[in-house]
Length: 150
Picture 1 (cartoon, rainbow, N blue to C red):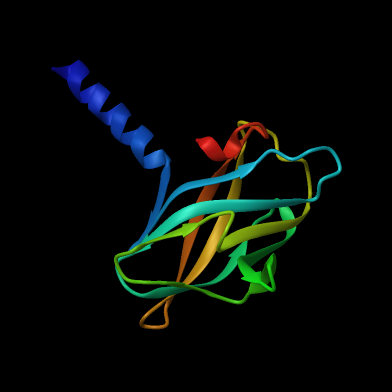
Picture 2: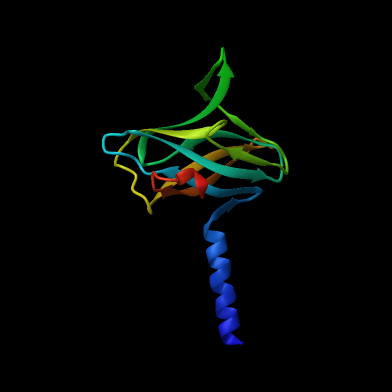
C-alpha cells in the first residue's frame, strides 16, 4: 500500500510539472525549438486557460534581451507577423499560442537554446479586477527536427 501512495505522489508531481498554475490561470505545454549557432530569436508556444476573463499585458525572461507578444495575420495574400501589446484570455476557454496565431518572441537570445533544456518565462496577466498575476512558466526546448509534432 505504501508503494501505491509513493507511485501516486510521483505521478502527481510529474503531471503538475508540465503545467503552471497561478490563481485562476493555467498554462500547459509551453515549448520552443532549439536554436542554431548565431540564431538570436526564438518563438514560444503554449496553451493558456483562465477561469475569468483576463489579459496578458507583458512577458519577461532572463534568456533574451527582449520578450514580446506577437500574432500572425493574413494580409494582402501574405502572412505577416507583428507585435501586440496585449492578448485577451476569454473566461473558461483554452487559448492556444501557436505558429499561426498569437505567440511569444524571444529576441536577442543571450545563449543558444539547447534541446532538453527549459526557458524560464514570466507572464504578467491583468485580471478583471485590474490586479496583476505573475505566472512563472518553463518552456521545454525541443529538438529542431519534428519539434511541432510533440
